[in-house]
Length: 369
Ligand code: 0YR
Ligand code: MG
Image 1 (cartoon, rainbow, N blue to C red):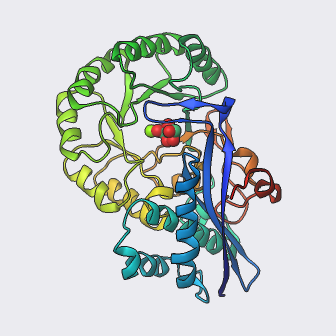
Image 2 (cartoon, protein in one colour; image 1 turned 120 degrees about the vertical axis):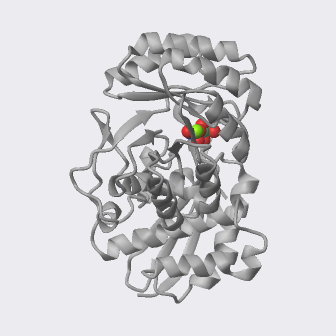
């Protein structure tokens, strides 16, 4: 089989309620920058990464796919995806300016599309190709009712509704200028959902270490399951200090671009719940390595979604280290077989491929130039 064409695209898809906010970002649309890889066998691979829908940055990723990676891939056999990944990552002129950011997110989109082709060629869903079992029902936790843009009443009402809808875990955003505001919201949600539902909090990397320690020491009062991205996402020693100073588990990883970055956090004892995002890390190929690395340290893995669930459901079903997966359903209307939760667990996707195949009208409805 040979790759004949790469057609990059940019979609901007409205988020739930047309506006959400966490401590670091306020967005109206989720950006989905990706590529359709065509082959001479007629198989098409779909891959994408996720952005805040900022056009100028999205165009950098799209152009990187078209100008840097497409010339490397044309004429190659897509089934050799691990070797192709090495070739793309190590291409000197790209590596010089890359290894993180735009080039790594573009590489992620391409890698996911290649794994989509590989699973389609094998006529099986990707989780099966990766060694997963049909009986694996991954627990979903819902983030899409926990935004900082919601009032206290909306937050509490939404939390109750998510639990009534079958979710056994929810995550709320914190990181207000006044942390007392966050503690009040955590307390209100815990009272609303009862003791048996997992409650996670996510500060999206906005606090300094003293604030994170002060807040972190209070979280056990409300049986918070993990404290996510408490401080600057690159600060290994800061997270290690926080872990030693508090007794609530720390979660992070959604903004890390390399397996080495995960290694540094893990070796420093700076993380418990490991949260790789294949669409930022460079695709399925390095994400599997990051999950293996966490597993070798007996750390639980909960891949980041926002909304990149399509690909992560396969990794989560296939890898025994993955215990749960985030649920944010922004892109449901875009896919042939959207990730679906019933009774608090993800259904097992059945279509061959990585579940990234777009509906024919997704490009017409959401594509931007
Ligand atoms: C919006 N999930 C997250 C969204 C989400 C972010 O900024 O991307 O809240 O990625 O932190 O855990
Ligand atoms: Mg997060």
